[in-house]
Length: 222
Image (tube, rainbow, N blue to C red):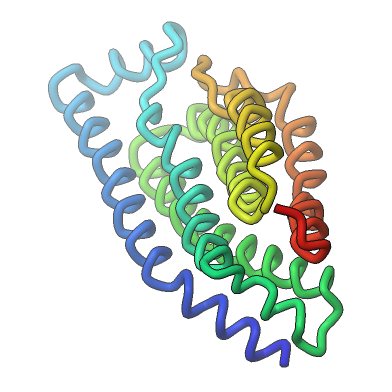
């Protein structure tokens, strides 16, 4: 039964994941096309100086890529469950309801993390071609909250989409619109360092948020 549920989730999200990966790879490629342009026309020492001492954010175009991935996965995975209240069919399977919801959330999280890993490794590998390790480390510190923001957006998006009560859905949306910007902020490279652990813990707390919407669906609230 668990294997069948996992396969059902994969059927829902597979094409979206492939499309997202394609667009994300193109976005990373665009970042390094700009890097190459700067190295060619501004000279490496001038470009490195602007990064190290003037706070130039050469990877800023990566900022919204994880956010888009998290929201797209939430829509692809959970919107079909709201059509004709299909989620109720899941609750009638011989698997405990909360376990079913957590399985869906865990599967989506693993898919999202796998996609993010591909994007991150591509970003890191190309960075190694052009930059010394000090610049790369500051970039990694800066982009980590953006990827955490993508995971948080996935959790909050799932919570909002699956919520059957419209008033609560609006309230959740307002909370998400206030909360997500904490992850997605521009800063000098490495400036996010002190906040990474706090943002990670906050994201972990959101990982069970879907249970609230699932509980109201089981009660039949509208």
